[in-house]
Length: 236
Length: 236
DNA sequence: GAATTTAAAAATCTCGAGAAAATGTATTGA
DNA sequence: TCAATACATTTTCTCGAGATTTTTAAATTC
Image 1 (cartoon, each protein chain N blue to C red):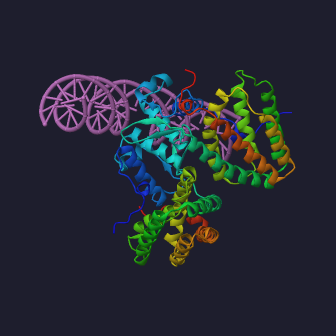
Image 2 (tube, helix red, strand yellow):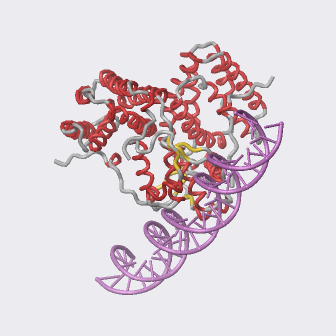
Image 3 (cartoon, protein in one colour):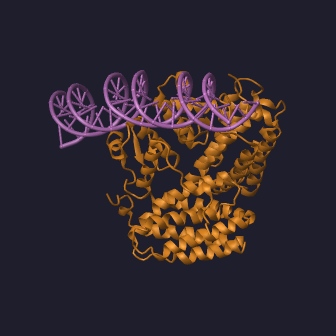
């Protein structure tokens, strides 16, 4: 068997230097190597990413779409700041949109959707087994994202899915702060499994309830982070 | 009296050439001077907007945030295409988000919000009186946007408002196609007035109903446009 | 000592030219 | 006639250097 997620979810090759720099920067921001609020000096960064100044500026402009970078005219770029208030907003907005998208997806999903969902869950479960503090962390992150995307893949609204992809990215940035600090992670596997079964049984109400709680739990674990550690840089 | 809308809604001066080009391009796309799907050649456009190639590329990158421009690596930029399917999606998503935001705004709005709302409606009404086919059209567009923004201004969710501003821009692009072609506009004034009163009376259900219908009516008038006129360029 | 002014330094913003890729056209061969 | 290949043109992408603005620091004044 060769079950794989839908093509539009798989990452495509970067064709230009702008896109490479864009992805590298996005990774560094989401994973916290560039600290929230940090100033992004073009002259300094262009060496790190091996591109020219104009190219880097373009990549930074693209990151404004994702609200991972902010800029004010003549005062350069900064990593978007973080706050508990902001993450609460992200969480609530995401609950509303993702539940709606999930209901639509459950209502419209066909056999292929079910198959993709099952496959995505399986891939995620495999990554969860060996996740204990290794470098498979990135693998798990990727598969978790795909599972959530496949869940709502059958929702026909492109705009809803577009907004959710932005919110997911934002949430991942906060979530990593929690997982990085928290020694005892909650049992995410069971939540995913319950979500899978509710979706496969086409029980939209139950699935939406589980998803809401799933998203809100992440907020609570971030809420527990000491405020002064929220803006810290991680790793090099 | 010097009642004016909240500062964050008022347009700020462009401080850089990138921003100027960004705004000029955005205007030209929304108002249809650059046709949907049209190729945006940097070498050709940089003269029209009086900036260098790099600067124009940066402005185009910013327009990707607004989903008014699309790009594929090594194949340049294009004006985002339009379709009835897309506008239906925009409409539905906007109905959901804007009604939710309106309910929150009605629940949280204070006296200042009421005053701003009343003022915004008054300014809009004045523009509606003399709107019949003159160049005050742009004035009306601006005041219509501000009225809708003030309606939901008391909603505390920044993300909701951010997404709505994107959707509003998109909808405006479609709406202009309809108003440009349609000789008999519907009575938008009464819809706005009913919306104002429901909001001032804090009747969230009624306000949401009116707003839903208000947004959906726009979709229907665009639906009536012949398909072959949807992708046409307007004016020079 | 605090606040304003002045000057130096750093960073941003901007442009035009060159390298890489894609598009369009002509040529060749079946 | 059609398909495939090779060439020429167009366009995109990329870089480094110069102009403008902001930031930093020191010096002056009250």
